Amino acid sequence: MQCARDAAAVGQGFTRLKPPSHLDLKLPSPLEPLDDARAARRGVRILLKRDDLIHPDLPGNKWRKLAPNLAAAREQGYSTLLTFGGAYSNHLSATAAAGHYFGFDTVGVVRGEEHLPLNPVLAKATGFGMRLTYLDRTAYRAKQTPTVLDPLLAEFGRCYVLPEGGSNALAVRGCADPVAEMIEPFDTICCAVGTGGTLAGIASALEPGRRALGFAVLKGGGFLRADVAALQTAGYQRVTGNWSIETGFHTGGYARQSPELARFIADFEHEHGIRLNRVYEAKMMLGLMSLLERGRFAPGGTVVALLA
Ligand SMILES: *Cc1c(COP(=O)(O)O)cnc(C)c1O
Image 1 (tube, rainbow, N blue to C red):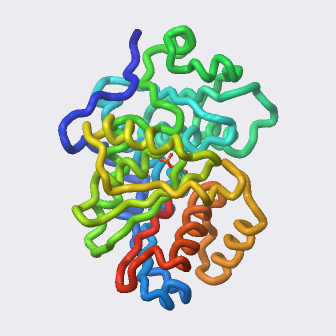
Image 2 (spheres, rainbow, N blue to C red):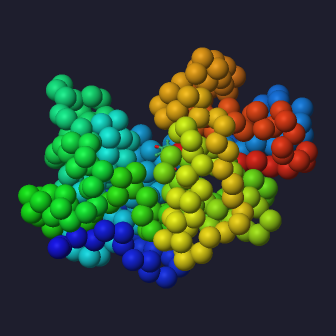
């Protein structure tokens, strides 16, 4: 079979492609203090690492994960990227955009049936030239098996295959970049946890004494601990003991929003002028503020919140 599934680990660093001159990536991403009364009362400094500002078409952690994979795909002579996602997957549209900007053809394998007209996420993906194909839920679950993957590769040709959500070994290492970019001292870095690739990467890159704290965005997120450990092993051949996952702030489940979360997002925007992503970072920030109120963070310390 002609495909590169999870690219093998290749030493500590990874190769980067030079972005085309017309692609203006805001890197390193900005680090901004959050002027928040609750944090001030507790004597805790909060900094926002603004990966959400890297590029409108390449949302933060999706870009961090794609960057090393694009270089690997180019190095290995692939001209097509193939990946998987649900009909509302940001990873699909980000892969489509990356393909457009870096000169790869892209194929998106979508879970479920085709619904026309396409929703905004899939319309954006096809706008960037992504070809879409659909798998029923049973086939989708078996998407990494040769039975399902081989016919796809027969149809679309030699493809660099990225997993659903984009989290493979190289992606985990790309996710360490926001940490590498920060020279400001801090104690804890927080992120939202979907597949866990971001948490795995940032935790792997932390200096001793620092901790990473993830907030699961889906219900029953306890399984994510094993996933993050597996992703760290894939990316770095070791599991670090410096991270944990809060599973109590999913507000009802993936893409679910409680009235409390809706109010929190509105208040945060009103106070800080930042519209938090309601599927991911809003839950992290709600959780961070709750833990802050409970005295979880030591006074005098600095907490970084990663907006991906
Ligand atoms: C995909 C995504 C996440 C989840 O990251 P994982 O590495 O899958 O845990 C968080 N925030 C945003 C904005 C995302 O698009």
